[in-house]
Structures are given as C-alpha cells and as structure tokens.
Image 1 (cartoon, rainbow, N blue to C red):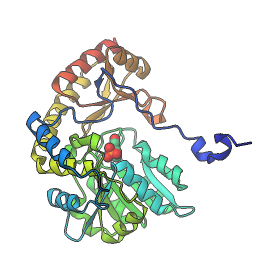
Image 2 (cartoon, protein in one colour):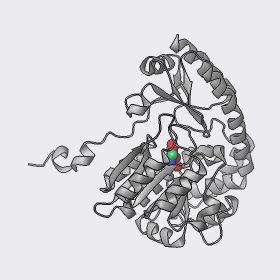
Image 3 (cartoon, rainbow, N blue to C red):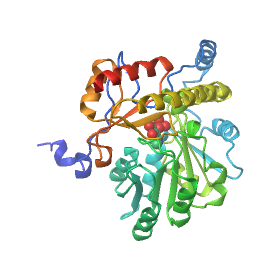
Length: 356
Ligand SMILES: Cc1ncc(COP(=O)(O)O)c(C=O)c1O
C-alpha cells in the first residue's frame, strides 16, 4: 500500500505554507513591486528580432560568461570579484543557503523581512533566527550584534533596503554587522535602482560579504535573472550548488539586450522615484494612515483595519499586498507598489473610499 504524502514528506515541509501569489487579471496590479512601464515599442521589436535569432535548440552557456562580463561592466563590479547568475535572486538565495546549511548552522535575519530567507533556511535544514526590528522598522544595532555573538550564524541575510518595509538601514549599522560576523553576510540589494546605496563598490573590504541584485525591479521581472557578486572563493563554492543550466538562452539574450539599453530602464526608475515622493505625501494625508519612509519602489502603510481596506481595494479593482496576520509587527499593514501616475491616482481614490 503506497504511503500518503503526509507520511513521506518531511515534517518541516508539511508545516510550510506555499508562497502565495494572488490572481491579478484585470486588476491595477500594485502587489509585487514591478516596474509598471514596458520597454518602448521600437525596442520591443528589436528585442523580438534578437530572440528570434536565439539558438534555443542548444543548451544555454552554463555560467552566462558573456552576460556576466556585460553586467560587471554596466554595474561597475570591482576588479577581482566574480558574478554568479540565478533564475531570479530567489534562486541565488536558495543556492547560498544550501551551500552553507551544515548541520546545526544558523541563518540570522532582521525581521520582518523577505519571507523567502526563512523559507529556504527551513527547506535546507538550517536554523532560522529572526531578530526583531525596532517598531519603526530600523535595525536595532546593539541587539542584533548581541544575538550575532550569542548564536554565531553561518549566514546573515540583510535586505538593503528591506522588503516589506522599504527602510534602508544606515550604512554604519550594516558595516558593524559585517565586521562582527564570522559567517557570510549576504546584502540583498534588490531595490538598489531606487535606493542608489550599495556595498558593491566596497566588496574588497570584507572577506565575508557578497552582494545580490536582481533585474526584476528594474523592469524585467518576467525574464527571471538575479546576480551575485563576491570573491572567487565564494562564487566557486556556489557554482557547485547551482543547477547547470539555471539561466535560459532566452533570458540571457533578453538581459543582454536590456543592459545595452540600460539608460531606458534607469530613466523609468527615476520617474518611479519622483512618483514615490508624490504618492508618499498623498498617502500620508489620508485619515488614519501611517506611511513608513521608503527608499524602494513601494510603501508599507498601517491602516485602521487592513482586512477591510484590502477587501475594499480589491472590490474596486486594485490589488495590493496585505501583511496583516503574517508577523505581529505588521498588524494592519498593507504594502503598495508605486505605479504610474494614473495607477497611483486610482489607488489613492480607491483607498480613500475603502477607508471611509
Ligand atoms: C528583498 C528581495 N529579494 C529578492 C527578491 C526576489 O527577486 P527575484 O524576482 O529576482 O527573484 C525580492 C522580490 O520581491 C525581494 O523583495
């Protein structure tokens, strides 16, 4: 008699909840921190021609060497550092975690943060250890350093700026964590294009630091490409964990094309940053709404009743993300992506109505 999944699957996986992605058909989609702008029509046609030319009958270049060279040049990766590509930075989080998951190893994270770190700790058999952020979501530096000394984590993930809060920790606090850690510190700079602060230029100063980024927030979420920069000694180990062909031919071609036109994507990011200022002020003016300061392309809001506000927004065709019930510090919190001026206008009107 074959056994049921509950009898065969590991207990910690049975206890996990799958990462939920809401259906968004026909909605104003402000739930996933995507860039609302597409590539201009002329560039899309050029891209189509490049993709048509791609050799999809062949396996991709396993390390994506040419793409790495272009990325290193465009992102000014310091000399002596190497790049590792991932199927999105989610893939890189998994690769790094699996590589460091020795029996008993601890992963330390400031929380609340991106849930995928903790999920991968659990999946890989690492022990996740969350250190609570301050009520305004800044890093409690001394508390974090004390836990670091007490638990000696093999791995620390810091999202810089953080998701879902948007807060960028002071550079000196992050530096103190890197210096105090005997394990590897991964700075996840997924929102770098909006925050424009980075430890990438400082990689050579810290033997225990790697920096991760993604092209997702830059306007290419659909192609799935993340990259990690670090010393060759680290990248060599991670390369053993990576699936051989983790970045497809089509992704490599599309990313190369997009990087050749990086200024178009950066101009879109600039427009989003300008819009972030306007949206933040307008949200803060709504009755009963607290807006946390954000250096990313989204805002975390606390509203009087998140369930009612979320449902009210959905009914009006606006999809945001509710964090109510996911972590005690996120009670009645919603996260909204900065959209186009028109999308933001719709959001503001709908939220005003939903709160009323
Ligand atoms: C902090 C952080 N890291 C990584 C990711 C995942 O990015 P990717 O689309 O490259 O997998 C996200 C996505 O929201 C994020 O917020």
